[in-house]
Amino acid sequence: MAVPLLDINRQHADIKDALTKVFTDALSSSMFIKGPEMEALEKEFADYSGTADAIGCASGTDALILALQAIGLKRDELVITVPFTFFATAGAIVRAGGTPVFIDILPDTFNMDPDLLDAWLNTNCAITNRGVVHRATGKRVAAIMPVHIFGQIGNMDSISATASTWELPVIEDAAQAVGAKWKNSKAGSLGSIGCFSFFPSKNLGALGDGGMLTTNDPALAARLRTLREHGGQGYLHAEVGTNSRLDALQAGFLRVKLGKLEEWHAGRRANAEKYREAFADLDQVQTPVIDPRAWSIYNQYSILAENRDELLSYLRGKNIGCAIYYPLPLHLQECFKDLAYSKGDFPISEKCSDKVISLPVFGELTKDEQDEVIAAVKDFYKK
Ligand SMILES: *Cc1c(COP(=O)(O)O)cnc(C)c1O
Image 1 (cartoon, rainbow, N blue to C red):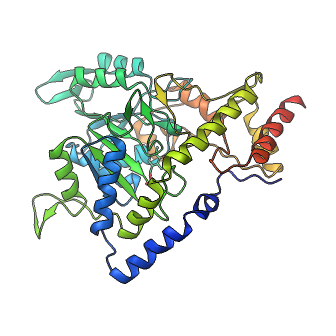
Image 2 (image 1 turned 60 degrees about the vertical axis):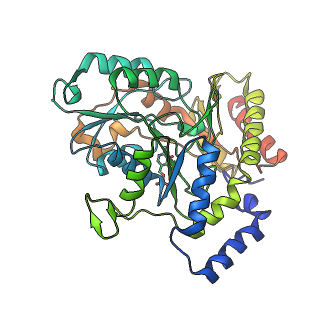
Image 3 (image 1 turned 90 degrees about the horizontal axis):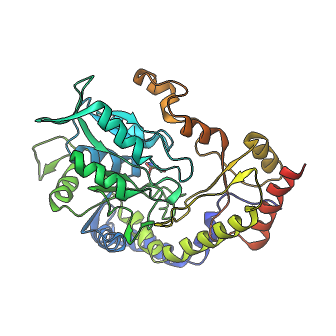
């Protein structure tokens, strides 16, 4: 039996009429950009995330770029992040004019290692009247950008403590983590700004591109609203922003889907639990390790597997959907060779890139399909 990695059609089946109505309503109102649908979604999304404000934009990548601009990132300043993430995390830093500094991840949760973050700041930086400065280059450090990878928030107690010691803003790359929790706080409410993506394969996916920013700081919210429309008020521009708005159509679709999100999270979490039990006695596989203080939404179900490449071919040979997120850590990407990192600099990220493989975990996966995936993985290691 073929098993897809993700089948969005199944998720849309029982909301098809509601989605169609959003389209016909937009067609008759001719309200295509922003408008009441977007304002309503912003309000609902802020409530859902437990933040004072939410600001729609065109994509998760734009959310990151706008957030960096809003906290005052200037050309060539440094932004601390991780190498084991989707490209957009570091790509956005560069697009916003900054330079990424990578900190390795933890081998169990794949989140930024808070001890390495501390050590890097303590070893390399000083607090000066210009803020935090990297001593060797004289460059200012503008922000810390942790990534809530695969739907799990990392240790935000430690990261926030470090950020407040150094008085650095935290920008959450929460693109994979809508609704995920650290203790009782949701993604997007733990830093200065949270950045979300509505790319269709995210847990809350639009029928196209879309993004959202969250913040509790009214000044940042106002700045973000201005920056997403060319930095202007009316036709007067104090600074240069961009065009990054959320369409009314996508906002309408997302409002329908937000109402189903908790149910979809529950389906993914149940499937993850089933894998965990099924693979518990399989020494060749490390199933996702979830910190007891974190509540994952499993945007991906990513295991570390022995003979990963052979396992990938084996599963693909059986038409079982699987994928490698991500095969090359960002410090080794061609486009970042000027950053002068080399192989061996971030051994945990490199090891994870060699061993990681993601299995189907979407909520509508049937029992038979999941049993097929489990049997295939077990058979592979029995050979
Ligand atoms: C998807 C994703 C983004 C970018 O979101 P887009 O909406 O595709 O621009 C950024 N960071 C991470 C970690 C992501 O997974």
